Image 1 (tube, one colour):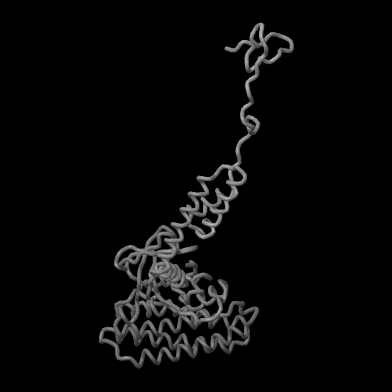
Image 2: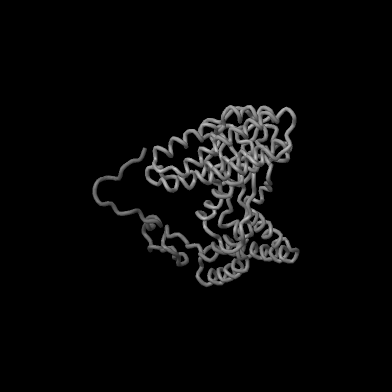
Length: 380
């Protein structure tokens, strides 16, 4: 514990002690002049800056110059920081030597080329081609920086069904590229997965797009993908059904079926009550497409076991074609719907199922809307 001083004003004790008795008073000589007690000595700011630049090897020449200036200022002002200035100057000299070595050996250009190559390829750095299957650690939505290519026979996140190359020029903007991806990927999906009946109901269309940065270095690829609508669910096996996996008879049949589906998808958005003329024109187009596909079916040489089912399907298509013709000339909405319903009744009907079975194709019709996947994007 401490003992408090006695009350009242007290004279501070003499630092030199009491004067000797019966003699003259003596004085100790003053020490050298200095700063008041407790005042810190400032550190030269340039010395600190020189050390920082030296440690980071950032602009080493500047670090050396700052170190030399700091030493000169310290000498004149008496500031501290001489060691910092010396260390910064030495490290800056080392940095200069390293920079000279890097530039003389070409290492800097190699590093820069590596950076440019990574940005240039964008999603092309993923090296994805049509038919590839892969896992995406970051998922199929948002930014995708890396993928792991895996065999399509096993489980995987996505399968590439098309790669669209964009023309050069200025970056068209994310919105424009997305519009192109919507148009192109949707149109190309049936060329890769021709048998729409074999597509799982929960498969969606995704795509990888060039970013503004990757565009600067030549990335022009839109990569169209199939993936599951649930982020955590993987695909199993390839979805590819095209001439590389099908026989000639299957390709001919699916080509006619998909041509008809494409025509049916062009149905006007407005109802017949609001725009009967547009619906009549569309019905006429379906009538014409049906005529072309009936001719293709009847003109092909089918295997013996498929001739009967395909002949029956062609006859049913003839009946539907007549209903589309009548719908195209309907004078009122009620008449239009009467023929429209009869025509649509044969689409994906029993005759189609029988023909598919005879050709070894998927024979379970998709539920309404299942063969019209949506789209999602990921940017690289």
